[in-house]
Image (cartoon, rainbow, N blue to C red; front, side, top):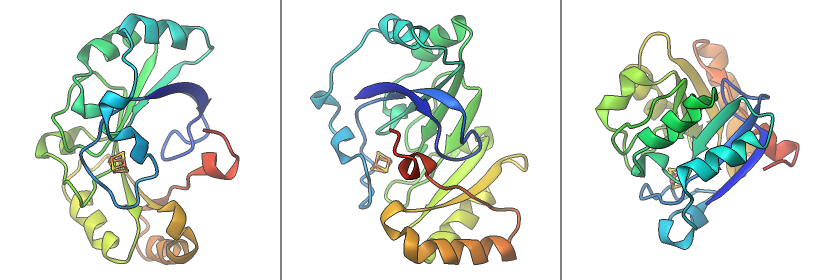
Length: 193
Ligand code: SF4
């Protein structure tokens, strides 16, 4: 769908320079999705894996983030192996609703109620990032926190349009449950893609 060099705005790698590759296609259907234009993969151009790698290598990027859409609707073995062969670090942001493929330095699992993750990805997640849209999302977050590995980082992130309402709830929740941390979409505050 698009690819660009920017700053990772969310989660554990927040603040790092990163080349983003946003793949078209998503069947998860979050009502609050902020990239609905990604849903239909056929509306976006196709790129050769090699040409994408060369685009990344035109920049000083060390880290590549594969996102979407739901990137695991595609088999990512070839893409990640090509990026690794160039010495690049590979991170993925996924709902986990499709089978895991690819070879990853970091897996950010962001489970969505609209289409739950498949069990296979749970032990592999390095980071669990739950978007909080309303109070019931805390229960959803705890359900998945119990299923990921004990080393997995735990983040709660306010849904952008509900941030004014839910951020105070998240802050209070984290104070009471300090295994969780706050993730903010800082790219939206500093106006970078
Ligand atoms: S999984 Fe991501 S891209 Fe898909 S609908 Fe949800 S927020 Fe949008």
